[in-house]
Image (cartoon, rainbow, N blue to C red):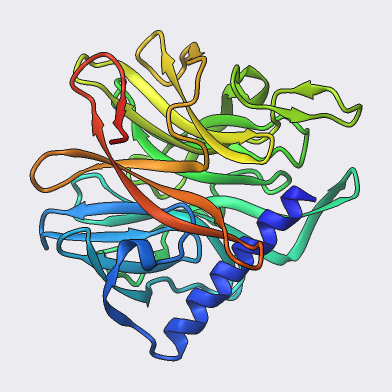
Amino acid sequence: MKKLSVVCSLLIVCLLSVSAQRNGQVRKDVPLASIQLSDPAIFADKASQMYYMTGTGGMMWRSADLCLWEGPFRVTEFEADSWMGSRPMIWAAELHQTGDGWYYYFATFTNQAVKIDTVRGNVIERRASQVLRSDNPMGPYRAFGDAAYLPADRPTLDGTYWKDSDGKPYLVFCGEWLKNWNGTIEKIELKSDLSGTIGEPKVLFRASDSPWSREKNDKGEITWNKVTDGPYLFRTATGRLGMVWTSWVFDVYTQGVAYSTSGMLDGPWIQEPEPITPPGYGHSMLFQRFDGQWMMSVHYHKKDAQGRTIRTPHLFEVDLSGDKLIIKTN
C-alpha cells in the first residue's frame, strides 16, 4: 500500500504543477519553503547566472539567489507516437551539460496507458529513464535520439548522468523493485552525444546491500528495504567517487551514501553503515553555488493537517574538501 500511496502523491504533484501552468499561474518571488516539489534538482547556469530547479512534475522554477523563485513553467514537448505518449507522467527530472552547448534533461517518464507486467498483484506501467535536450535551459526539451534508452520490459527510474574516469558518459539509474522486489542501481553506457545507449545495463549494487534501510517482509520479519531511489554521483577533493541514494527506514524516507573502492562506476561499492541525512530527507543531487559552495538539494517529507504527505525542497551546505561528503545540518 505504501507504494500505491507514493505513486498517488506523485500523481497529485504532477497534476497540480500542470494545472498551475496551464492556467497562467506563474508566480514570482516565491520562497523555496513555499514550493511543493518532489526530487528537486537545481542546475546552476553560469551563462545566465540563474539557478534552474526541476523535479517530479516536469515543471521548471528559476531563481537568481536560491531564496525567491519564479514559476512553474512547462518546458517539455512530446510526440504522440513515442513510447512515452503525448502527456507522460514525469518524475525526478534533472539538467546536465557536457560542454557541447546543449542542455540535457534526464528524467523518468511513465506512459500509464501501457501495461508491461503484473507482479504480486501490482500492475506495472511502462516507465523508464530517457534523455531530452534543448539549446536553452528553459526549453523546450524534446526527444532527439534513440526511441528508447532502456529495456521496454522492465520499469526503470531516476536516471542521472556521470562521465567516468574512462572518459565515457553513462546513464546511472534504478531498476524498480516492482519487478523482483529487490531494487537495483545500474549503469549503461551512453553514446558520446547522449542520443542513446550502448550495450546492456550492469548492476552496481542492490537494495539488499543496504546496512541501514529497514522494512517488514511478508512474514513480519525485519529486513532491508526493497526500494532504491535517486542515485547521484560525486567526487570528493581527494578524488574519491561516491554516490548518494535513498530508501526507507520503515515509513521514514532516508538517504545513504556509498563509495567505490576502485574510484570508478564498476565499484565495488561499499555502503556507509549509517544514513547521511536526517530522517525524512532524501532524493538529493549536488551543485555548486556561484560563490563555489557545494550544495545538496533534497525534499523533505512531512504530513499536513489532513494527514497527507507533503514534499518540500530543502538545501544543505556540503563539504567535499576531504575524503567523504559531509552535510552541514546546523
